[in-house]
Length: 187
Image (cartoon, rainbow, N blue to C red; front, side, top):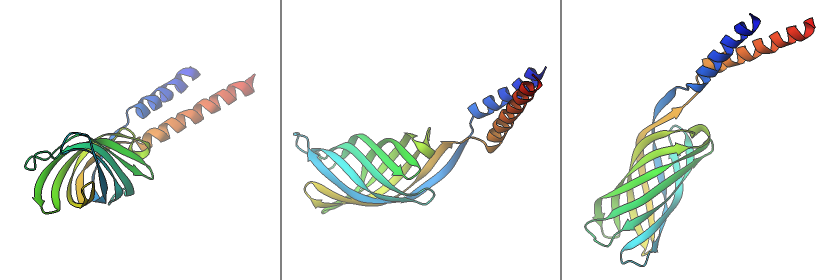
């Protein structure tokens, strides 16, 4: 009988912790940095290595990093493939993929729209998903270096344990401890 009384709260606690609800929020902020373009051997095709600084209005400052393949061999059809990014916050990281499209080009610079897809994270962002769009102004500093700055906005979905789940789990643990202690004392 006592085991049944203890087993039911423990089973409920385990189930409620395993079914963590999700929390969706808006993410938005600014980012800036520099890209180094490394020639691949094919004319107009480069590996782009980006790093910089960012500030998210909800989660604070972060370090954005990215790498991709840029095909600028046809000036009227700028494309990016194999884009990947990582944003390192103090509470964890977000990572995923990105694609770019050019929206305007002028002498020495261009404006691009970057579509980011969040595929995961670590720490606070473990299991995160979402997407955001950035509008970025790119200025050529040299033939192999760009300066980039812009803004972004999108959605982020985080898996978070419900506070009630943690309370229920803690209560079940206390009951088990007390029941074991009482049974040991009776012997």
